[in-house]
Amino acid sequence: MISVIIPIYNAEKTVVKALDSVKNQSWNGDFEIIAINDGSTDRSREIVENYRQRNPEMNVILVNQENGGVSKARNTGLSKSSGDFIAFLDADDEWLPEKTERQMKILLNPNLNADFVASLWNNEEVVYPYIIDPTNRVVEITLKKLLIKITGQTSTAIFKREVLENTGQFDENQRYSEDANLWMRISANNKMYLLPKKLVIAGGGKKSFGAAGLSANLKEMEKGIQKNLREMYEAKRINYTEYIFYFVFSKFKYFLRPLRAKI
Image 1 (cartoon, rainbow, N blue to C red):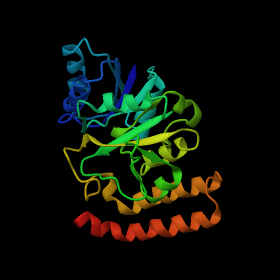
Image 2: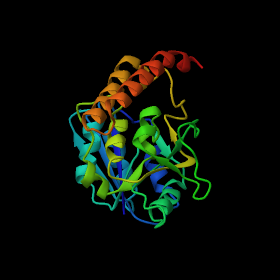
Image 3: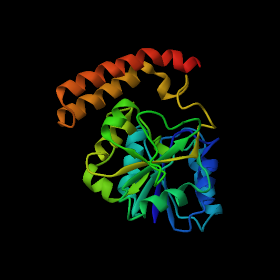
């Protein structure tokens, strides 16, 4: 069974599409959908409850809590999940029908020993430092690649439950680049891959980087990135020379981001 964690905050206009995208998956296994209403002030709670009643064949669990941020909401879902595999889906994103079927083939492939599989989304392409393996048609994700370029938008990720046991959950005190923080920690003990297929439509098809949403707060995003970098150094996953290199490289990208957002 796949546990699908959906954090919801004022998503009355999009959450049904997200839920329908799980309903329409071609994978023939079971799903457990854990929808966490994170203190919404709109009709999100009512809409999800009505959806659950209209679709009794779907295992939809609605959890209501005071607003605590997306990381806390996801952690609530993780704590209540029971599936052998776990996937994330934001309330304003949609999975394409073949998403989980394609990813489960990788996770269940004994030749790959995969623990975590992400996919492309929206306009994302496979670029340096990521390279497609011509044999298996997947891309290996490692810490040093993540430090150069983050891949694995949250709604694209699916992983084995064992990952939680050897890594833990999201840092609830981190609001920016919190998904990258978890991915970097996951990379310490798990085999991670990127499936080079666009299988998620996020935010109605917005650009991977733009001027809207949390990513638009460039200063705070950079703080999150630098926090991740310091943690990897303090955990001795990179040495001091590497830390300085990635620090400078991140600052260089930081100054380029306003230009990229306009393109």
